[in-house]
Length: 305
Image (cartoon, rainbow, N blue to C red; front, side, top):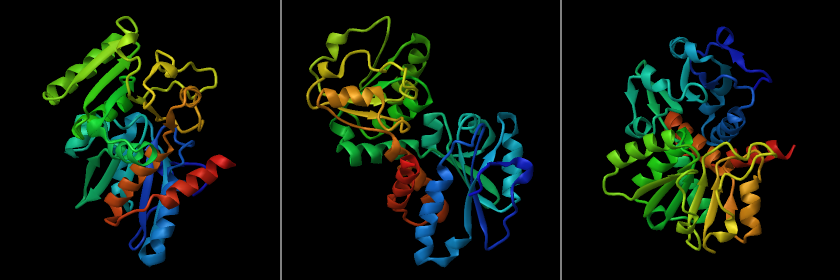
């Protein structure tokens, strides 16, 4: 992986047997996706030498050039792409062939070129599900879930939890407009599920006290040291068997996770979700089972520097 992302007019051509993979975004220099995927590809190549010819890079693509980028990359030997901000939602209007879960989640983060056409998927829900099971031992079917936020990450989390049969999903967002939009969408799709919501202006904290919740932070609160906790009440007032999952992975321990630890609750950051969603994308492209171990090790080494 080169130190700077490629611009669209710089992307290399890949001629068989070489295969190109990339993550598209703007900005994109912060992405560690190449570290994860190239580590997994290196491990794959031990058993199958053909994967020595697979390469994953970053490509800086502004929002208005997504369609142009997809055409160029399909002609340049690229088989798979990951999408991040600002392309995940726009891809719904650009890619014709969409997985049902991507449509329901309202975002695409993985593209696969098949027979000259791009197919869109969303692996974020899969990544979250695997992470909750591995890190916290959560069975969504028996969990009451409190999701903080009502943006794209919250929508993906809510959809996956409800699809897996969550006992109850409650969404808390500071403002009402976005919250109501998400609640209406979920209630229309999951008619047999319990979906509730609250905002800062209509909140009864007593409804959450001394109850065991799986708390998922799907907001950006925690990225900065000065950020307040996204949870509207102290973790110590939750049930003693509550667990906390913060989608943020840098920093490793957010204020929410610190408060959870102080309250004696088990918590985990979003690194595992990042790894599992990446592994699922690579499985789609390679049609091989991917172990997350190499990706996890690469990520931990990166953040330990």
